[in-house]
Image (cartoon, one colour):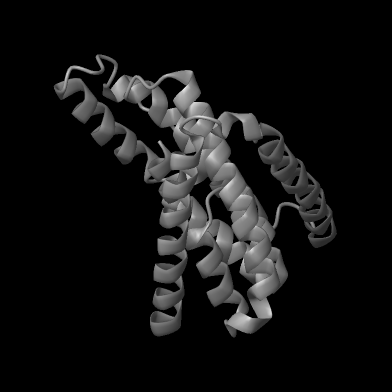
Length: 208
């Protein structure tokens, strides 16, 4: 669960994968707390390190979207690089989110073959509906149906909601959840996060 949360889309991936592999609620809560905490820490680190990285806004946005855990994390960190960075961060991050469906299917089928789950089927797969919302809003903005001033207003409103999402992620983290197996999940998530960051930095440096 921690690996899925780190690699795909944070707590949303954990919540979607847990039923597929018949995980208990305690394991899901610990994984979500670890991933949320690490994602928030890395968001702050990325924001502070933006100028030192030497990336263009688009490259920095791609770096954030490719390596951070939640959509809110990617957008919040990307804001350090401006509008272009945020847009690129969200696009790249949602590309990762789209991998939730095949990942859930493969893990569910694996659990089903091992006898740990009987719920893995196409009908039970989680659908990340907010991707369709993103594409719909992008289409509306591109069509010019709404004015530039109203679009700018909606962007400012979206920043408020992003702030609320970040606060919500923080409220999920309870230190007592790490009392038993939590530190193992936190260590695994930290290793995965560092690997993602290093790989993302190398990819952006050499290919963008």
